Image (tube, rainbow, N blue to C red; front, top):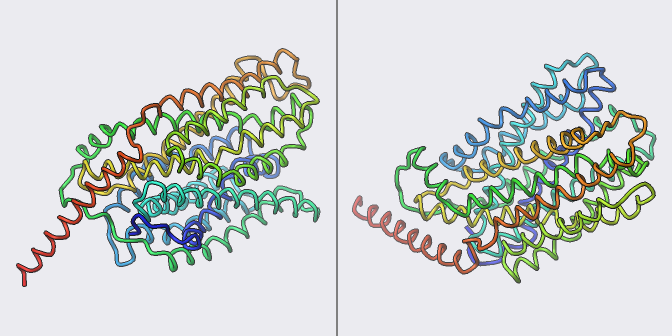
Length: 459
């Protein structure tokens, strides 16, 4: 395990390579797959959405199960790598079956293979994040690790959008053709990148802690008593939900307020490009003022720049794109800083529980993010409908446009601000983390000494 030393950037890039591909699948599942199954395969849109949502129900079981097992099971190849290796074929088979179905594909086909796709994703993503949290025990180095991982994740999405532009230029604009092209990229690219990461980057030994038996209920009690964990759950729930509301409404705002839905691909491309470009600046700020303060700054940045969105109307498309790009420059920072802080929260738990439970904690974080995305989509559709917005109407009245833009700009701003309140007087600062690490390192030395003494007695 690397400790208080900067890991070579090249090694971190190799570690982060799988994220370059797994992140690519998220956009098609949200933006292309529902429309393709409804428009080109003739399945009911509501039923398609319900099938995709139902395929995520399995996550309630698989996330904590895989997270906990990857903490407990030790193999000669490590704790995290075997799960990533096993999840890769499940993921690529699921991608191909969902993205390139037969013409007679049914809702049952979509439900089964989407569930397999998400299972494979969980088996890759959760252990991968836990592996990253264990590459270093240094407060600032962890931010560097997660920033590189999130930067590559965003770069994958930017590259996907560029790939779609290339397909469009070549005249391949049908949903089936675009999904087939994306499927080939994922099926061929992910196994190679996973192999490089697993073969070239060491996993490192698990944290040496007290060897104690910890029952499931007692383990949950210790987790619940961790004040930093509860605060992070609260702020992540609000942050991600707020962002998801705007993501849900992007296309509808362009179509029914700006009057130019064709700008949607450019909006998403510019937003992701700005996010990628701003990662070094947010990393620098987190080193200067601390991770939780930088996370507050990122959330308030997005909140303040979301407020002017409520004032935009038809003819303001350029202003909309500019604001989306500037406010979106904090997206990656919110993700990488939250994941970096999560690693510090796990250290506190290791000190309290006597065990390193990175997988369990990242499973809890993963479930929170999924719940937040679902909540954001729900609010992004239910609130406009409650205030009279109908996307199928030929004309959206000015009063309804005004209410839609208030939901688009003000509601996420309020949620981001409320989430930032959870981080006021956050209990894990750089100084507190140093104390926790000193205690853990001392305990680890004692455990190693005890093991050595026991071995000597055996001899």
